[in-house]
Length: 275
Ligand code: FES
Image (tube, rainbow, N blue to C red; front, side, top):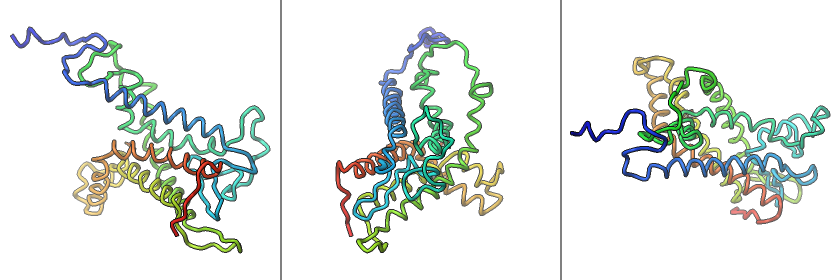
């Protein structure tokens, strides 16, 4: 009798026997991702001007660089590695240092194993959630083009690890304030804490990456045979257990860090110095 009540294997789109609110999770992912993509795109297209960059706050002796614009390869702040806007920059495109760097963290997130599972559901409804009917009858998976490209994730991981070093350095620079005589001294402002947390949250996300576990595990099927690899694998696994949490906290905080520095630079709110 139980078999008679079962749904046919090929369910219609949205058809399910799940009694819970299965649509809440994909809807939350859709709204969260959309908000971040809209804001980060807007921020990248609004770097401010050469005299008043919106991504660098240097009032009150501070030195806060927005993570969306770091490393600043060309740009308006003293952090710019190769100077101001280059002559070859296309005239039809607004100049923004973010365009030269944002593709790397964006590629890392886009190809992340956790995010793939989340946005396949939220944006492609493929399937819209577990055990819920999907709109397509055929699924080719990630073994075929174009989704086979997602395997590039491990290479974005290498870049992401470099970015952790760069953003940690930016947080370190945010601990040094310039006084009226031009002398740098140690200090902590609210922005310093915001930037330190940004580096910590992004590190928590990056170092819990599935690809990193494989990498530090020594590429072995049995990492326990190599004690150092086993220890590294356990550390990465510890973060990996909460990979979804780190993914969302770090996504929210990196956006907030840009908002914080931008509003300081625009004079909308002050950066309080703790000492
Ligand atoms: S699997 Fe999520 S960052 Fe690598």
